[in-house]
Image 1: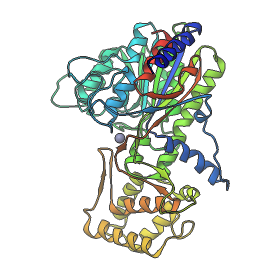
Image 2: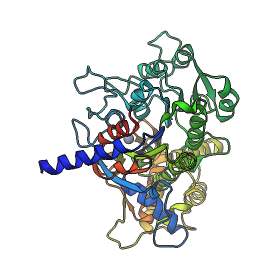
Image 3: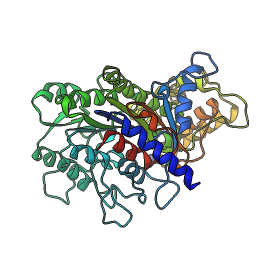
Image 4: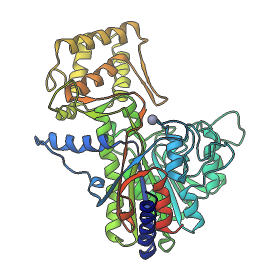
Length: 464
Ligand SMILES: [Zn+2]
């Protein structure tokens, strides 16, 4: 056994020593994106075209693939802080800890910090708030991920060239009198752009940049399923980051982009929204692939996930078939539908009638029309309607991300039943996460690995 390990180690070094270090490194992290989320999205795309099979996503076609474990130092089921720290620094830590080792004193240096030291330009982006666990793992060192104010201060102090994502969480924490996270960032030389157009107008004259959604205080980009014309996207963040980092192409760059909300709809067991988020993540990776095509010998793209969320599975209720195409008739996330229902209630000034709610369910989930309901399913919706509008206190809390009323919750449960998608949890799981790689050094990302191996491989290959 020992000999085998030695042989593998030698082989690994031999590969990296012979190859030229990639100048441009992309690291994409799908929060909550287990192997089944990736497979489900591809099967869904085939099913809506009436085919049994899969329609490949861009990143799923990368030539090198592997599997990684996601466990934390203190538990098999990690949170995003410990998993982010592992993917950023190559060090396992305890859940809730961000860029710190379990001793609570030593900082775990991230690959982004190493890249910066090596003279590279650096960008960090996410669809969730920019001081959230996964992006924070790349620039912050805190004993708890909940120190949002301290994390945004460390963002400002990082000196990284570009940040993009949802607005700061706890931007105006009253316990601190430093003027808030935006001011601290500006004091450190960051230009703050709200929306893609503002980015474009200011990019040339800015030394360092933070790109937020145009909507003030919006702490995450909208789910793809809820998106409207003009809303900021992860693909745009990736485009902006490339554009900004390539102001000095000779330096090379490291960028981490997170599809952060695959996790949110996973917690909510909202299958249609989760699948759309994986597709949205793929759209951002397409931008990196277009860049790779221009510089194939100098670019490395690695795609992975921090953990799986929800225990999503294809197949349920003892059946030997899937009906994923049913999910195409859902056109709002459960989060947005819940908000929409309260607006409907406000408009009618009181409690909407069952007929009014029925019309909403028909329009946004295709119930009765496209997606036929069993007697029991219809009864459950009617009961949930009474609980939501008659009692008004039966909401489900999806972590700290959003709250939904009972009716929206039951509607997405029924969608999963119709599609025959199963869920084992409303939390994270310890399921394998996938690793996909293309470009210079990509051949090192195969086989079974630990999540901590991934940044260490990048460090070695890119010679940080
Ligand atoms: Zn989560």
